[in-house]
Image (cartoon, rainbow, N blue to C red; front, side, top):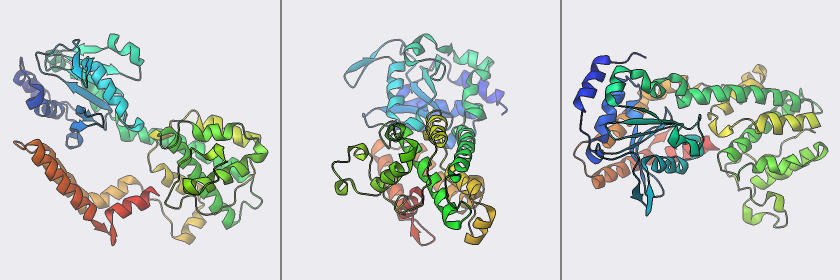
Length: 390
């Protein structure tokens, strides 16, 4: 990705010796990213409101970067009062990271006061070590060494690229699990067994995702199964799937092992499917090689499509008129049809100059109401999203 060196030099000169957090953060980082030729500037989020009441100054979500911006006269080592607690900009930024859903938590944290950049890599250092392991440089040094910001524009750091790589690994594991579970069916060649096996794979991936994304209690799926003997594994899964399809108020109050699993609506667990017997090897593979080493919260939702495509045999897909469409091909259709216009409208609201916070909030609320009123294939958008999630 080519850096616009002329734009970068102009950026450094334009901001030399000045910078006010409240009024100039948006302009500053937009110009910096444009000089880097970052391709997703319209998706950068400014002033992202968090449940605690705090605001992330700049969130480059796709690149996994969270920025805490201060004015040029602010010492990046000096604590300031935040929600009644004295915090340095780094501590403030790390608290914001912790508030994000785990799949969204940024790898890179940047603190900046217009005169100094400090970059922290959460993958390389523990939380307690970060303060002593900042990569620090000035805008002038950045102008001479634009590679200092490569972590923003490196395609390998892209959230979508990471999802893709993890999803490929996960798809391969599910393929191996599929083969092992298939051996447990009495008639694995029958259409009923093939259908049941595919549903079983999707249900297992859903449970693995939920326990890593905090939709279930942490590691609850694995803890539920780890002490179950292989001979009873089938019965334990049937029991769990029935519970997930039952409202918590309607469950057996004495069945404490499934008490903390939530009710999952949408019908994913409603069908009574054929579940095979498990061997000790199949159980071990599921819990120790599929569940434990993989962070399933990082999996792209398209992994479900990948499972669908890789496990169903071609003849079954043809009979059912089934076909998995990649996200890239989906976007070729929907982007020019309606999504580009909606993104442009959203960006115009976010970036409108001279707009008060109240007017921007009102405009965003109107835009939200518009989205909720959209209909595709005679299905309202909120219902379409609900169906896709299910």
